[in-house]
Image 1 (cartoon, rainbow, N blue to C red):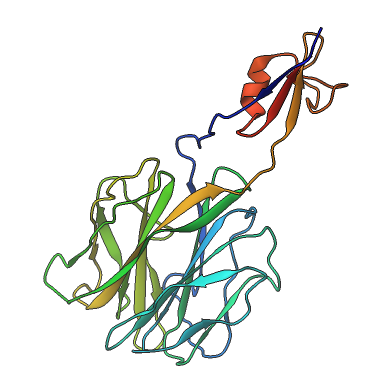
Image 2 (spheres, one colour):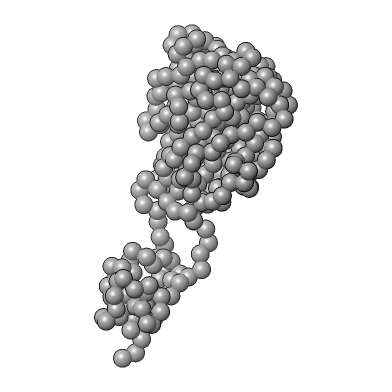
Length: 289
């Protein structure tokens, strides 16, 4: 009997819910105290995996403060444009986690020591082969103190890719608590807020939205609760997830095979097509024996 070769041209897609929120870390912890120039460290969440998206937000209580990466922690970081008001500076950095931190994680530097905060959020793609890039560029804005209920709204973005996470951030110049999140599909990222009581205080709060098809995220709002009525700034950015390029594999299937086999040689073929359906991807070759 002749062997039959089949080459797959089907395009694999990620399953629904392919991106998930994994965890967060901060220095200081909410309602803590931290100030410092030079090197300021942050301990990443434990049990991270290769392919995770790491987004770091730095916030300080000084206008035009320079934020930068001190120790890269073994990762390749990307820097987004800083936002600044007359009393604060905020900036976003992001990286694809390569599976191992050097020196226990990254450090960041601040040119001024007043109320310096670092917040890290981690998102997970469908596999350790996940790669990340910007889908919709960061947009920044400022907000005024306003009046009760001190609701601060961020204009949403319209995604281009199907597999995305959009992250919104609010920064204020007091130790505000934040509540009353509104916006369809948006959820709080990490803690309700991250307050730093050093110097003249600051506070940050975050929300994210996961999408499985390109569409408008819709606007998202939070209100300043405790000590509400402070001016500040916002940012929003969308990341897209994709798979790393992959060399096609060769699989074998035979009526005398076994689905417990490796399936990648004539001596260990699979038996059932369902098994191949579960493992094969675009560009793979299948030999029927």
